[in-house]
Length: 117
Image 1 (spheres, rainbow, N blue to C red):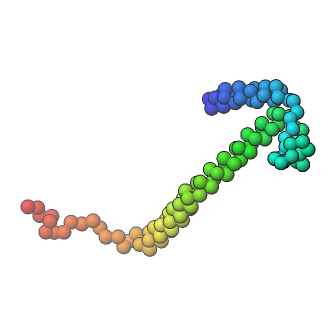
Image 2: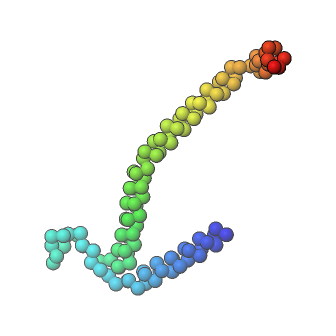
């Protein structure tokens, strides 16, 4: 069912991407020199769809890095909680091993309370 839903969503997106690439094949000049309009120092001819795809990929990478950096506090807190849980488990196991099964006290009611009111 999930595979069908993925295909239902991803197939139209893939078709749109292919249509975008086919419709925008014309070369454009990508210039990285803001000072010289006539003879830019760093310029290259690329198809428009390549520029668009590169911009989208760069946006995804920048967004992913920003999200990863923003979640740093949560990751640190989770590591500390995991460490504390491991310590408490170890202490619980140690205390269980320390108390032997024969040394437990039976649950008895004191004789003064067993006679009732």
